Image: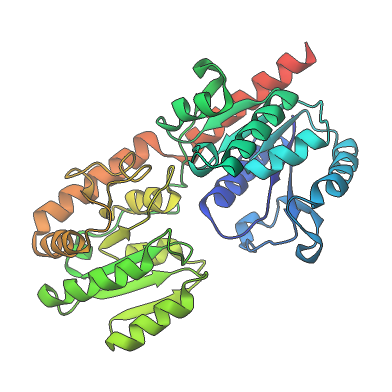
Amino acid sequence: MRVLMLIHSLRRGGAERVCLNLALGLAQQGDEVEVLSWVDVDEYQDSEYLSIGRQHLVAVSEYQWVRSIPRDAKRLRRYVDLFKPDVIQIHTPNMVWLAAWTLLKEPCVQVLHGYSSITFRGSWKALAYKVISRIAYRSLNLKTVVVAEPMANLASTYYGIRINNVSVINNGVDLSKFRPASITNGQKRTVIMIGTLSELKGQLLGVEAFRRLLETSPGATLLIVGDGPDMDCLNDAVTKYGLFNRIQLLGRRSDIPELLTKSSVLWHLSRMEAMPVTVLEAMATGVPVIGFRVRGVRDTVQDKITGHLVAHGDIEAVAEKTSRLFAQKDEWEAFSKRSRLIAETRFSVETMILQHRKVLEEIAVCHEQ
């Protein structure tokens, strides 16, 4: 089976990682896979991904949303004609618009990685986006895959389609890469946050929560992994509070598995998620998660079973739950074991790849008939 995967770019992020892991897994099963990004941003030079064929349509300097669509649709058409895919898998909503403008007749599957593109906010702009997205959806006769169960109804309503046209396939992680942590991690008092540094991901809230944590756990350390628009603000906050010895801004890192094994708690303080890969990686490592009770996080973290959920913005509760987890070795160990077990039974990358391949194969066969 020849599979073409479309994505806006390959910046560091959960959707991009899922896309590349799928490409790698399908290729290992004998499929011919190419990943085509709209713009030439590729931050995945990890050795494990170098075997994946990757191309792009335009340089970042040439890209202009929405003006780029007519020109780049021609480039996409040429590439599709050259690669001749049996099925196309689309990983970002704006690529659906481009594919529809291209008038693709090849069978297409859309993978929705987040809520933002299927959440109607009531403005005229949001209404226009919704109408255009519905037109694009019907033009391509899309099959839709969502990464979390609660997304299915929202996708059905947003696109005006039947719920049985939406498949749910949970994200998965490589369990062999993320080994269970030692029970001594519970005494390390190291908190880690992983993700794009932005208001959405909540690292600045993490700094405030960490200040409160130090009142009861003065030996704690906070590792913040990632890069993004909030980097300068975070540096300013660390400077302002004199926390250079306690908060480490590590930037982008390729050794996430190793960093997790050295951590005792993951803070995931996002405002909204779908199925956060970082949380799954922590669970696979047996690292308890403390996060806000918001979409995506509450669908992944089981409160008082694999970690703790608190109200959005309640940094006092984040600090209190973390301090308690540091102090109670038995609770930390129970959370750790349950997290790994759930990751093994629900969130393996092998299961994710098999389920996606089944959908792709079914669509390709139906198209041939």
